[in-house]
Length: 326
Ligand code: UT7
Image (cartoon, rainbow, N blue to C red):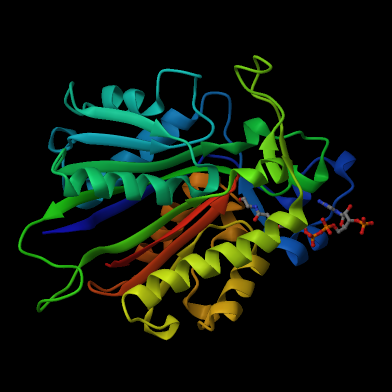
């Protein structure tokens, strides 16, 4: 038995905002943003576009691509740091609006930019334990709602969006052996709470009764992102006797093009195998990996059985990686 990604989908807000359209009061420039981050534009959700509407649209797109109906799903997990409401979970809104059968499990999981990796890990465990057979695993965010639009060191970096996969058990398959190996091989989920202060919001329901704004010590986060994503990837590859060259596609969290280049250099992988959507989407936190995966899938380059690594790091710090055969 193997846990496989059957299909992927995504959704973006209607409005794309290029760097040049950011408020002039920020005293930033297209040149600074592009050269320091690779970001050319970000999508910003309108008032009637929320994390749940993006999640629902991404889930519909994944179901369509899978050729499945909502009744075929028996679990919904949404990775998000920006839920519509403090409670209930966005996942329950997705279940209801999509028409996933009542009574199926549905919950949110918060691991910020590592959220999708954690959600895949938790879903993989529940599928392996046969608590469900087929799940929607979604990363959905409206990070722009957490930004201080007077802080140019953070507000230029983030965007909104959602990506979703249909994850299911496939009987008679193995991820590592057999004629057509396929599925999740292994994963890592890590956190170091001593680093809370370098990336956090100064607010939340229990302390301030509001959501707070995002604060980041950019250079420190950059250094940890390169070190920790690289070591998570190498640990996974080593554990299964693979080298970085064996990996056909790297689908990393999309925070900064320079981070992607630095991870590729550090692990010794060809940089062109790193999928990058930083320019078009900016940093969409838990949504960035499934959004990038959907771009890769639509590019037509992905083949069944391709060895793939996903990796992400964010506030906590929380980070992780997933090794799979497509
Ligand atoms: O998703 C979670 C994970 N997040 C990340 O991985 C983000 C990690 N960090 C980064 O991507 C980068 O550190 C940043 C993009 C946030 C910043 O790039 P940097 O090369 O580390 O720049 P810096 O913070 O050292 O700033 C360099 C200069 C500063 O001016 P001074 O002090 O040298 O005069 C900043 O004030 O650039 C200035 N600056 C800006 N200038 C124009 C900072 N933000 C801007 C801006 N426009 N938007």
